[in-house]
Amino acid sequence: MRDIALALFIFGMIPFILMRPYVGLLVWSWLGYMNPNRLCYGFAVGFPWVQLVAIVTLASLVFSKESKRIPWSAISVLMMMFLLWTGLTTFYAAVPDSAWDKWLEFAKVLVMVFVTLMLVNNRERMHWLVWMIVVSLGFYGVKGGVFTVLHGGVNHVLGPPRSFIADNNALALALCMTLPFMRYLQLHSSWKFVRTGLGFGMLLTGVAVLGTYSRGGLIALAIVAGALFLKSRGRLAVVLVIVAVGFAAYHFMPAQWTDRMNTLHRAEQTDSGETRIQSYKFAANVAAHRPLLGGGFDVYKSASLWQRYGPEDAIPRAIHSIYFRVLGEQGFPGLVLFLMLLFTSWKNCSRVRKRTRDNPDMRWAFDLASMLQVGLVAFMTAGTFLPMSYFDLTYQLMALSALLVGHGMQEIPGRQSVKARTSAGSTMSPEKSLDTV
Image (cartoon, rainbow, N blue to C red; front, side, top):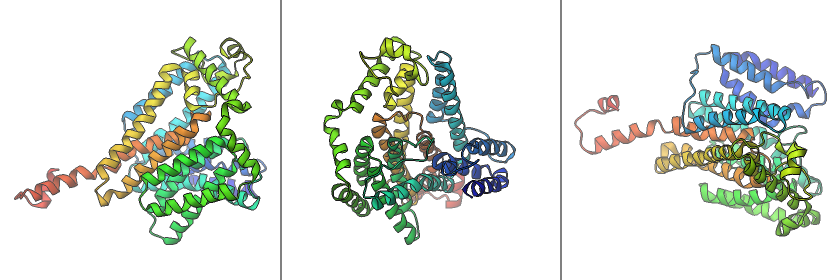
């Protein structure tokens, strides 16, 4: 029944996507983040729903009246450069077949990110995109939180199988990145029951992060909690959620969870910590000997390179760090582009916060920029211990930071100019003043 229901829903949405490509972007985001097909049991599991919706969305965009122009900015230029650079390194990859598969997957993600840049051109569309992210990933936060409570925290919370967030660590990262957007929607919902529901959603999502048993997730959760307190308005609600999650961690989670988290004090002595460090050394050695092009996507799958560049008696494994993974796979130029994308996204949000801080009409932009920064903090901290360098949500958040600068602040200079002129005693009428701005 799930398979049939999912198929009927998606095929039923195709006419709406053909009429409005933005609807296709929302459906694509839902499929990409929530992976509802992975919750099915039959034909729907392996059907390429994301690819189908992406193709229909692109076709709809071509024939629609929507702008076909990519709004070029520092973010869009850096993304294009990063995409082209990863394509170049793939030509010289140590594991060519796997590398090309990964590059095509990454290219498809960035194509839809560029579609995001074209279609999300006002506050309302930004708001609905945030809702789609929260609904898609928040589903696993609420579900995982309830699961953790009902089972006493004994069992691990995992994401949908064979998805980007199937692993407990990956799910913890995604949930930490979702928390600030729950807070943004809570701040800007006019309905009390929605605000209350989002508050409980944040609480259960925090508990779900505990239930993943991810040590990197716990570190990210603690940092996100502090960032939310510093960046959010109305901090009492944030404090209540933080206290409730802390209470659950201290009094509710079982001894096996506490024992696992205590290994953070001696991470380098654990098998997991030791093999992570080995993978970092391997990535650094690959980059040192191949500084421009690195080893290409999935370089860690090359047994010969592990023998040549891995530490003595190293156990080959994935490079569990967004930074070392990019370094080993894309070389130093790739790492520079990746870090520039993160830095520019942060600076975009800082610019929006600075220019909208004292403008009540632009409070939404101030809050969204603040929560985007918290989401980036979650990615940069938890990603230190995870191989999630090409996580699609991260690049969509980068796009949102550029959109906030490009569209979210368009009306500010005009309003400030009018106020300055009228306060200076200009004899020009307000209507003519507006016309000249």
